[in-house]
Each structure stands twice: as C-alpha cells, then as structure tokens.
Length: 330
Image (cartoon, rainbow, N blue to C red; front, side, top):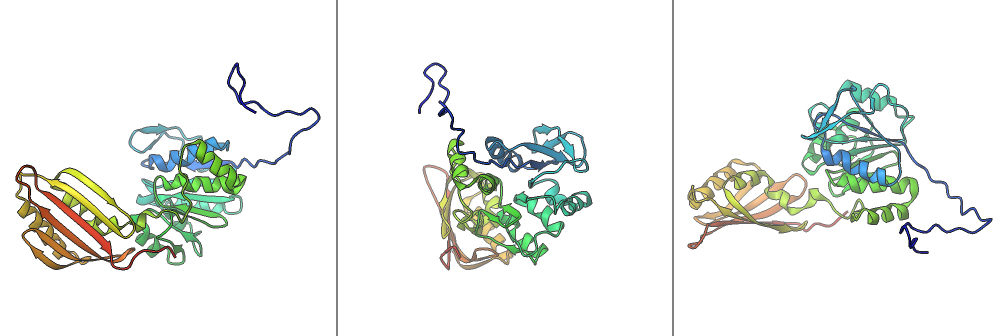
C-alpha cells in the first residue's frame, strides 16, 4: 500500500508467482462527430470522460477541412464521415448542423449504414435530432435539451420522449439533455463497458458529482414558466439580484433601469403577457401582476410579478412562479 517515498508514484502490488485476477477490460473505440457550431461542452465533456476512462477516441466530420467547434475552437478531424473506420460508440453533439439541418443526407445515410456495426449511438442535446432523422429513435426512450423537447416529440411521434430525466439509456441508444448532461451520460457509457463501480470511481477522480438519469431534470425546474418573458425582463435590468428555486417554485429578483419609469416597464410586461396565449392575467395594478401560466412540459402554474419601489436605490422587480400540481418523478 501507499506511494514510493522517492517518486510518490502509487505502489503496485506484487506477489511472486501470482499474475493477478486477470480481469478483461473492454476499451471501446469512441468516434465523435464534429461540425461547425457544435457546442463545445457537448463535444469536450464526453471526450474528457472517455479519455480519463482510457478509451481510444477519434473525431470525424463531413470533410477533412478544419472545423470550428463553438466560436473559438478550431479542430482538425481525424477522419471524414466517408472514411471513418469501425467504431463501437458514435457520439453526436448538439448545436450547429444538429439544429440547422439534422436530416443532412450524408449524416442520415452514415447512421443507417452503421447500425449493425455500432454498439452505442450517443447523443447530447440537439444531437438527438440526427438520430431521429435517421429513423432509429422509434420505440426508444429519448430526451434532448429542455427547450427542444416539444419539437422532438412532434417530429418523432414513435419515440418515447421523456421530459423528466437527465439522460436516457436503451439497449443501443443513449440520449442526454443538454451541455453538462452529456458528461453524466458519458459515465453511463463507461459503466456499460467497465461497470458502475469503475464509472463512479472515475467521476470521483474527475471531481464531478455524477447524477444518474432520474436525479435531475432541467426541463422540470419551475423557472421554465417565465422563460418566455425572461429576455424582455432582462432588457430592463441593470442587475440580476437572485435566481433560486426547485421543481415546484422559482423566484427571480432584478434591479431596474431608471432610464424608463418602473411603472412603464410593468405596463410593457403586462401588455406582452396579455398578447401571449401561454399567460392569463387574473389581477393587476400599478405595482402587481398576478395570473396563471400553461407550460407544455410543466403543466399549469401561478405567477406573480411585483414592482418594489425604492427611494434610496433602483426599483426592483420580484417574480415568483409556482406549480399548481406539485412535481413528482413518475
């Protein structure tokens, strides 16, 4: 036990004549699809997990040209979609092409032609739409980025689209919601090949709190109720004081600009809410708007927007939303 006192390397157990338990370690070949505008975390999150797991990794693209992942990362793909050797796990990130043209003929043909040779199709965020366009999501439990769940359900009605998980696992297909969820789902891939104990130990080594598929669902947080007007509210905010909550309720607090009267800001918000089919006003006055909201994923909720006037500083806006039916995982 312990480390070498000279070099600090971990000591390796050795008994003469004993070769060890002889465990077989599967090292699946990982191939990550990259393209202009692919989200950086969708690509590098899984790549980092698989690299730490000791899995061989390559990247491939539509051509051998340099790919700009995100806005700043320039990447030379190892292969093209036409000359990629066999791979056990194919990774499809979101962003860029996944949202602009997921039905790209080269991509759909590639996915379909690899079905017999691929052990796991793995998508992050909108990368699920590549798999949907290739026709391999039917009768599978799938998910994607919270805001894209309605589109995934509409476009692929034969898929079982889930809105209350961080990722899904099927026999051959693993889909994850967005961004960091791809990291969590990557540990699920590691667990598939090397066991859950190894995957959890790897997560600990990487100082990452691995969340299993049912432990967190971004699409179920109550802040989604106000997402439709959040950008408008932020347009008038000079400071974002607070954002906190859970699946059943959420609160925001903003400091407002003094270039437009706070009363006018509240009136603008009220007018926008009246125009929306998602919101219905129940009560409003010079400092308060209260009503109900209907969300495609969360169901019905209540909201309140309160203007708090302050003589010694900027006025603030307090926004509270709450589910009418408390959330419970099914």
